[in-house]
Length: 279
Image 1: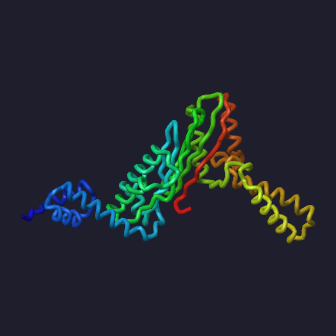
Image 2 (image 1 turned 180 degrees about the vertical axis):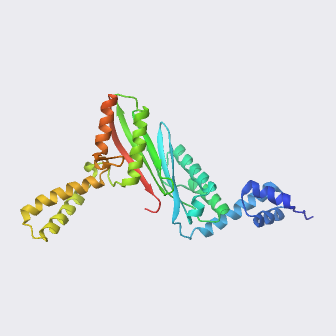
Image 3 (image 1 turned 90 degrees about the vertical axis):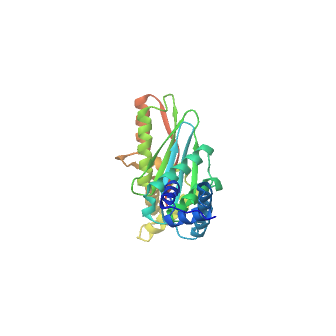
């Protein structure tokens, strides 16, 4: 016996699932008016549609973070258009995935993390991809803060070790938030100069020497000039050696050391992550 599917039934199912009106009506018809069965059908069909969308290019998206006393997590969720990236549904699923990744301490994308994206893809009618995830574990003397750029798909987390003081001091957390903003603005490649690969430094110096000698400088002078250029170049790509974005002419390291001195403790930036959609 066929069941009459009313407009009210379709609207109710749409309110529960955010699926299209036509999709809701078909699901209710196929389920003989059974709401639970109709929801199940929509999910099954939605996931199938999401899988077909999987071949479409995802060039937009955003970064989502979750931080507490024990862990700090960031994820990159991609979609096809900036229109979808700005929707509440996209933001909600992005934060949900970040929360899930944080709870499990994930550092790789799993099927469990992909599942909410596929469900949302069925509703938003776009391909959604969890591109990457990273989690910092925080020791008892470590603290982290993050920053997500509003209007631009960039985000970062900075992790620090605090010795001889309160790691949760408001000024420390505020500075780390500013440092995370600095990472987004300045895009450092390494934590410090010690982290830079020796082979990279050698090859970069050789390039500077060659460039200087091509200007007619003797090799001994070219070596000295290249050394200065290399030092400046390394400072530009080393996080703690960069000029602080909120206080030019002062390095990140100097700002951190200054606050530690003011608070009577040692603050050491020990790691950072820098996520940019598509990079």
